[in-house]
Length: 275
Figure: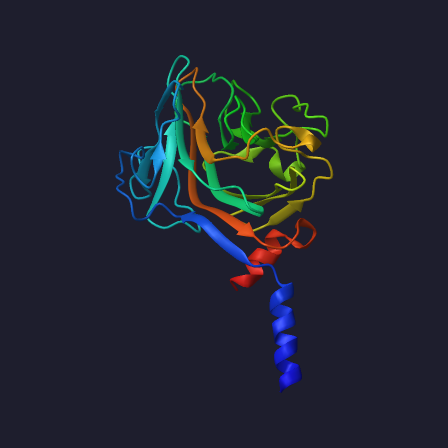
């Protein structure tokens, strides 16, 4: 019995321990079919010094964007629609990204509710550290501006020398290319602050539940191998402006610290703990 107890303890010590710093399906804030301002709810604010309009909280039922019910969604989601000119839709929320390996996950759905042609970019999810582009950006870009029905979901990352990849970012693979509008996907990425690297990215088609994971060998956050100039302190939701209509929605967002070294950390390991 004593040997069994020791073995169990050793297994627990070897397993990754996750701590969710933030987790929300946007269920317990005020929303409506027409959309209710997200700013001021659940800690969200407009980024200071930016030309921004608000993200809104929508009910899935009768939502003005015409987006479908997410297969894993509840009653509400958040969405932003970029207006004309230099203004964009933004929502930012502070989060502690220091202190260890962290996996960031969220569901996303893009669409266009304006009159084509549109302009780049559809939108993005980013970790903000005070620089213009942020530490890393998951950037959604249209495949065809004249017919905005598919888009790519690439990553704006850096090489070891700290040089940013060319826009619209690096593709992890074909599963991140030609995504359908009005279709929900789940994204996850693992960041290791010790090496300043993005060590894992994944995507799940929430209609088919097909999951693809990519382990980039040389993707760094801002600063490259020398280290980031400032640890990310917030995450930002963004929908592009220019031509009115670029719309990007999010649901089921989570920021989860994992205590094990990056070599032992994976999205699969995190999911296994909650089965």
